[in-house]
Length: 509
Image (cartoon, rainbow, N blue to C red; front, side, top):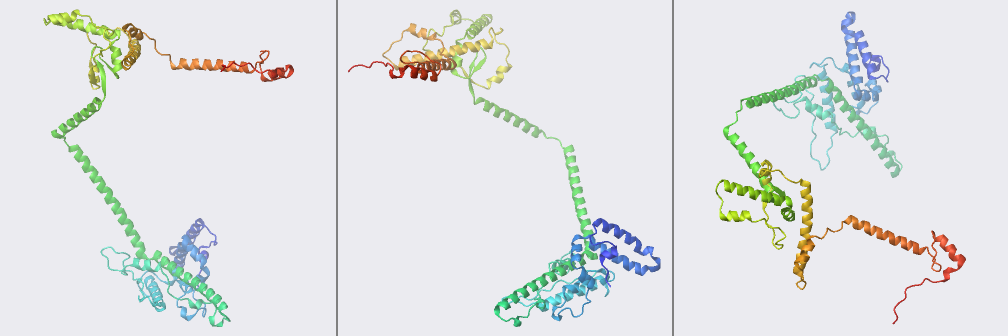
């Protein structure tokens, strides 16, 4: 007689995992063989059933399947004549194998685990082979499922592959994906010859087809679940899991040890490494090449450089205006005086040198047509300039701000002078005297844009006020009003609207 798993653990069918665990511990303490010396055999059998009940109910999938087939499992194969003889093994027949009471121990004897389930699955395979009916276009024969084997059958290939079906893993792979080829015709609800007409016959065929599909699905699920149930309790599978875990841990340990050895070897090589002389030279050369590249990039930009003042300017006009400044002239005179003093000290003076020293520096105004000489140099000289100290032994006389103002004024005057020269060249009929050209140098700068905007805004405002005043004035009496309503009231009361405004007289033809 089979006992319900819930009754074995003494819990309700709605018990949680915590309740099952507590009940299992309690029943295990009660029925453990060591605590029942007077009834060892009974306690051993009961304790095994309690373990089986807890294993099934603690697994969510197995518990759900057990709850759905509980009555059939408890009933077993006790219903005589309840099935068709052509059906073979049915799902209800397999229910009793979902219990550890069907075998005794995990040996190879006739009542052992391997013998019982080997015979069962061999019988299922023979039934499938008998029910197999190939199609007319399919000449392939039936493929038998792998055997369950015995306790010595390896679960998976380790030393070498022995072929398909030689391992227990092949057996479980086939039966856990089982699909029956039986027709399940014994599950038909109606006999088609009893149909009165073809419409009823079609309805009968539809219901019979549906009943067969339901029975086939139930049978396939039962066989697959049984294979899962057996694998979970197979000692070969448990041993394989332990060996696989150990193998993975060994591989991880080996990888970790290899990485540690490689790290230590690398550290030892770095500690024993000594840089060669040729590597040092290569590094120095690479740094020099990089500096040359940077200098080459800097040389692409060309500025205007004043040797006297040791300054750079970005445009030719700024440089020309700088040469006309008082500061530049003063520094140029001081430089010439110092050079003359150096020549006298080393006895290198000559007549030509004395004549050049006695001549004053010509002003820019003496020759308007000549363009001052411009010294162009690359911006790479900026590095040298930064390293230089004060030139000619004297300090700068004016501030840089005053010089910039003076340069800007001179630049504007120079631009105005150049435009006047271009106008003289383009209009040969007009002659401009030298005095007029000199007067153009003193022309003040153009009025700024801001002042022009203010002036335009003021004119616009005056015009609007004038128009507003003209629009609110009576054309007859000339009286002004603040609002248009007051003007309209005046026109309405006096009748001045009839008088047209006097316009300007046109020319007679």
